[in-house]
Length: 216
Image 1 (cartoon, rainbow, N blue to C red):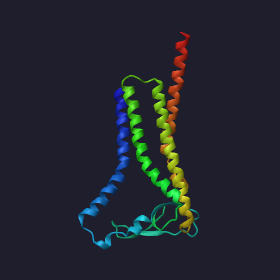
Image 2 (spheres, one colour):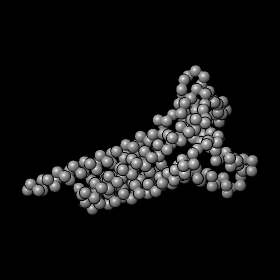
Image 3 (spheres, one colour):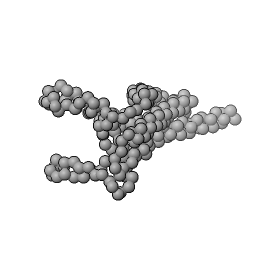
């Protein structure tokens, strides 16, 4: 059973590593473009375009008057219509100063939270492998794990939705409306709640064990 547990835990770390790959790939592409010298100066986007790049999540508000864009299919050479569900737009958005600071701090905090989650997760696995399963310290570790995952997910979701509402007041696409639901990370919320539920299951089991030990 321990072997199976360790395999599942290893799979968790593999999945987390896969989730980081897109960010690492984007960083690598940018680094390569900046050091290869294979591009012309005109090919480099202006700094304003980079600073003003905003991610916008959209959903159809009504079928009438939808504005469909187009893009070239490099395989067939044909122009095909695109449905703007999530797009990057180059438009300046006037964010409140506190939100800009809060958003920047939160983005860095996410990396710290990820490290903390990994440390807590490793502590739980090490204790289980040593045979120290049904102990109150494991309950506390699970509660911390679930609370941190849930709290960080709620914080980032609230900030993203609030940021999207600001964008929605200053940018709009005909026939589309901001898709606020797409900013909700259902998976992260579920993982946090599951960790808290498992912690309470452990707590109930330990409480019952202590009560049985007192009656003997």
